[in-house]
Length: 386
Image (spheres, rainbow, N blue to C red):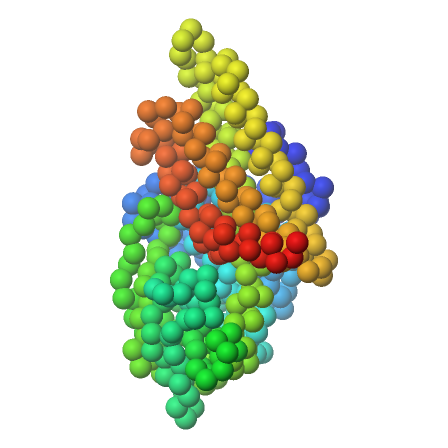
């Protein structure tokens, strides 16, 4: 268990430790034994997500009135860590997109009627959510999206496409960004909409095959004269860019947590391997060069973890933590990639075998410096604030 190697951060309260231990047991009992099958089938079974909903895991930061836990940013990191620690990046993505990247749009900007209609089912895991911002020609460059939404009576008509959408194939409820005013500055003409699965004109263009995150269903979404009721406008018209930017901090903390959890688990697995694997008359762990590289990997993870919890604490206490969150998203993601490189290297030939967890984790880790804001974008956010 990671607690043996890595000390609990100072900001981890007793309540958060209890939550962490509950998540830990769930992952060990309900995910790890069957995760390989999910990788083969390409998605996480919905009964598992409903089970997580029953246990209260899918609404940690959502209002108590709807069945949530009303916790703060520290819970986002705890959840992210334990999902990442599962060693199945696709499972982690499926869960945290639902909890910390998509559904917060409904919680933060939805009307009471919208929350009454959808939020209990979202928290219970009966409706799985996705968020549609990225497009074939606009990823981190949110302001230049091309999907359009034109008002037509008591509906908006959506046309366009979204790309790389996690939970896109089997999701139930989609929060879609579209341009509603083409005459103003790009950042001032975007709105968010609630689009239900099965809405005429809305379809999955194709299921995407990926390098990693194989147990995450990922899709291109297509909107062709898709009529969305005006009552499904999420937040104020033309203010969607700001809601997207606002939720990026939660998303990036979650991704940092996932990278940390995966890094800690990879170090645990590799330490066991190094102490058991015999070569050149002894265990690989007897080689000081290997020991020192693993020690440096652990030091970097420890540093990244302390930084991440501190950034979450700042956010939880109402501080502007964009700089710190951008730092930890970049640093945790890059550290995870470095850790996986070393862990695979020290597994030798076994490290590239599909039966080896490190092989999968190395593939999964490559998306960390890309998703939720590429490392280069994060560093520019930091640089603006130096």
